Amino acid sequence: MINEERLKLMTDISLYRKSEQKQLRDAETFYRVDYVTKHMLQNLFLYTICYVCILALVLLCTLDDLLNTYELVSLVNIFIDYIMYYFIGLAIFEVITFGIYEVRYSVAEKSLRSYLSRLRRLARKQENA
Image (tube, rainbow, N blue to C red):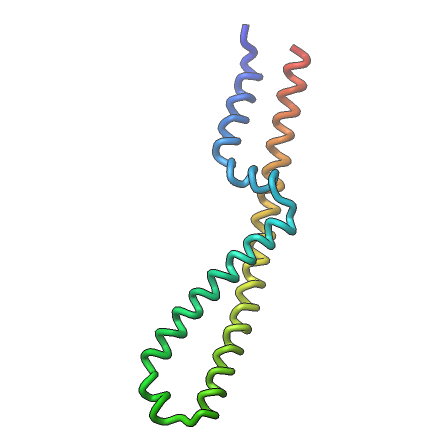
């Protein structure tokens, strides 16, 4: 006869695995440093692409004013300012990214521990049966 308690536990584990699959996979596959670094690099490229697109739009909108009213020295200073804004924005964005993915990894790690605990409980119940 089927043990109802084991059946409930097996169903619970299966549903938990299905709903938390991505988190569990990330916590199983990556170390914390690798997980956070991967996402920081990914967001570095995304930030750079977005910044270049926005900068291109701003420059296209103000191109006439820039070429008519500024000298070469002023244009170089504006270019340096845009580079400085890029690095300041990048630093802020990367700090935020680091915080978000540290928390996500901690949650995934906790979820993995919970999942493994349930599996151990099921294994004990099967040994006793």
